[in-house]
Length: 323
Length: 298
Ligand SMILES: Cc1ncc(C[n+]2csc(CCOP(=O)(O)OP(=O)(O)O)c2C)c(N)n1
Ligand SMILES: [Mg+2]
Picture 1 (cartoon, rainbow over the protein chains, first blue to last red):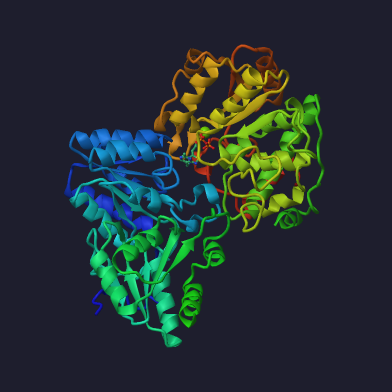
Picture 2: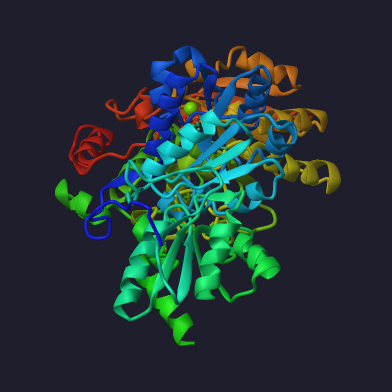
């Protein structure tokens, strides 16, 4: 049974806020608690919301210019010197450009560098394909020692940021640009490595991460009106994956639908297929980006184009279940 | 859309005129002015985009597309063409305007900038629009690609008389990739490579010298064995002359440090880094078009 507190009116009139805003607040709070927390940015300080930290702790902020390889390697050096560095840029550039540096100097060294990739997914919108990072979940979750966190709303991003600062280890934190609905509450739990059951069901498990969890809730609601009982599993930590929670849901429902604003290959969809193939084979439908790049457009237009809205997800799940 | 702005300021559709190559300085200045108006019009129709950089680069692209480069809008893949890589892809509006005014695609299409389904993507995409040599947007990779192309022409195929050009932003050259390319081009003496830095002293977080100082910029490039020319990048004559000087040097790549004014031509946009990624409102666009039209209604 689910006990996860969901915001009242989340489905009817949700409060909207960009997920990255929660990161900005969380980093500021972490900075107040622990003076080892430092922040580094590559010329996108306001977009990534690091300006809150910069303005409060100017001496603990480092602007490296447009230089993502230097960004994470300087951070690795600072981590070795005893600090807890949070680095930020757009996900397309960090970890998009500096993956090997992250691998060797942060992950392999086991230095507690937090790579914060903002503006991930197609909700970036008009900037187009070059700026819509879709491969980050795949490239980060294959790194040993690396944790991969994809918060579902701004409140959860705030909790996740504080949790990462309190438990220093190499980590990737994926954020989104656009305003998105807040479904959690200030009392909702967040623990690194935990997945959460947001709705109980019998027929199918909707396993979602990041911005897509809200759409999964909408889809489950739509499906219930068609007599289909969908369970919603929110996976804010892609690595380490909470196999126990996910497998127990799949034992109840026998069917998985994964939903993410990322390439399904290697993404959450890939992770769930690896898990089910090894532990409990069930049919898996992977919703997300299917081996193509994004493009310019409004964020809602793009979600519709790629069939990633709650209503469209419900249609696809319905089709799956009707066979 | 474009017509609305024209109509609002009492003008019909902007002229769809296309321009060819010219040596005449006043014609080139006129083309740069038209390109600035196109930039304003297209950004006013767009949902988002970059304003300061593109306005400041109008003379660079004018000198390239309407004077220096050998190219054929009817045949974008012409094997004898000179090649241009826009490295600072966020300045796409100035490239799109130059391509449209050269005849690569209809001027009216500028009104579709950044919209779903448009060929004018937020950042230029090679496989989408004729005349784009390479996709850009992520900063720092234009110089390497230009150097790779130039190396093939000069040192492998030994072709003479074809040139490779690129434009980078000054913030962009914070990227390590740029300096890796600088060493490469110096090593291989790429005399057929002519690169520009749009030296406008702004980037996203503020003034370039605050974010990451580019001190001794000329000496930096000279120490990598480049031929360096420093000019007023908003003088189309200076740009044309610098390119000619660059072409005459066959044993070293040329770096033209083009001092430009971000937002050039529109006083309320000039010199302000907050216009890096802000677009004009329709009132601001009308005002800008009037200013660019010498104070008359555009
Ligand atoms: C690799 C990479 N990192 C970060 C960005 C985000 N970004 C876009 S433009 C820009 C500033 C570039 O400054 P400059 O080249 O001087 O351009 P200007 O502001 O003068 O137009 C940044 C950081 C990017 N596009 N690519
Ligand atoms: Mg600049």
